Image (cartoon, rainbow, N blue to C red; front, side, top):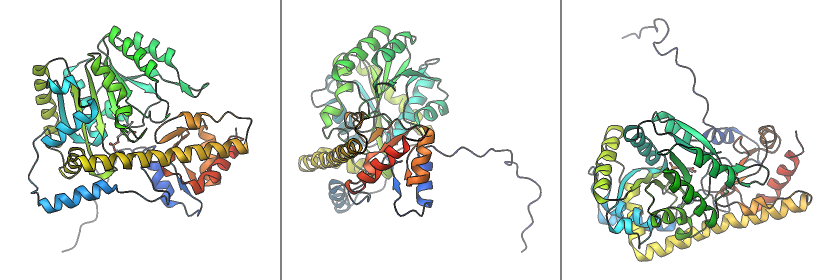
Length: 410
Ligand SMILES: Cc1ncc(COP(=O)(O)O)c(C=O)c1O
């Protein structure tokens, strides 16, 4: 049978090419480069000292146990795996959490941090009509997409102060105070992406005051718990503070970084509210949203996370591994700082070691970033962010040279 030649333009020919994703596009460009010195500091995934992907030992151990247990592949309920949901809210809020003990947390297992944010965004769109979401300026590249795709209007609040390469607390508080009551305030729980600039404990208290006095609704995005500092407790300081103060909030969690489960898409959306009945109703509506988007979540990552969190020996080993990952990043931060100071002692490079988490916001402008890539084959996002998880000790000097050289470009 012969095939017919296409007759005329496609009914989709008017579809415009979507712009390349600013973060994921960096990896594509990196793969295409043939430069032997190339370095991918774009995407936020942990690499070993040999710059290889890393599967955590506890993940391998959990998977072995899962194979031995010979689980079936039946559908999960809409809200996900019960053991995971129980474990994840406790991990977030701590063993002593009153909200957990009083069943005031609605938890839905979702598709990692992104899917959890998306379910939360859809919930806001449906049940908080007219509420605007305030995002920090700058923020993780996907936040705007996620809220816009859910039909939720977003605006920005001041966060980063270029002059100090630190937090613009006064600007932030002023913007929170100017936001209408009932607005949603997106807060990075720890390791702010892309700046690596987090509020101090005193600053979190001031933020909580402004949220409380203005009747705002925080939406925490916790994508790096345990990965940022190496301590699950320390990295959950902010949501736990808000809970203790009786502030209701949403919180999206991700296990991409702290358990290295990037492709398993495991995370959760939580609503921490004032009473058990509201939590139950909220859960039912979040389930409905999940049902319409993807019906129910994948099971593999949930079983891994639940096995690791619920087994004392695996949990202890996981904490060690997070400490090792966070420690490696701190080591390359310190080495990069030393190299930068050696090459240009006149510039203040202290921001490199002050920032926390996976990223460093270098202050390089888009033209200088272009120079980093074109001349030095260092692939990074156009906003000047570098992922230190993709840097090895052996490459610190090379990177420092490239940064100092690129700062000489206009
Ligand atoms: C701030 C922030 N939120 C959410 C995510 C979500 O990632 P994932 O969907 O892989 O959990 C990331 C990942 O880079 C992030 O940096």
